[in-house]
Image (tube, rainbow, N blue to C red; front, side):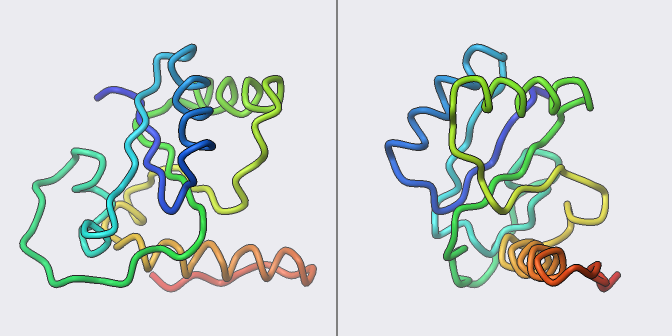
Length: 128
């Protein structure tokens, strides 16, 4: 599968800069529409079929998910983003077999919990 970054709640100017950055790296960028907030992450990145799901609350804050990327590609993305002075995205995740089954709202909640724990000097405990 093609390396892809899913974006949530990203402003148009930042999305444009991200697309430019990713074009240099051969990474696709998919801005997830609010009406797709109920889909599983795996469906959004093309690993599983889309489902007929009820509407869900959209992700209220900027978030990205790095999909189908090797460790080297992730590192190159992060390094290039720094070099091009692309302001960091506070909530980011790499696609895993666990979070692939979550909705964007669930991933957002987990990432916020993790960020808050780090800010308080502890570690987050994730539900299975």
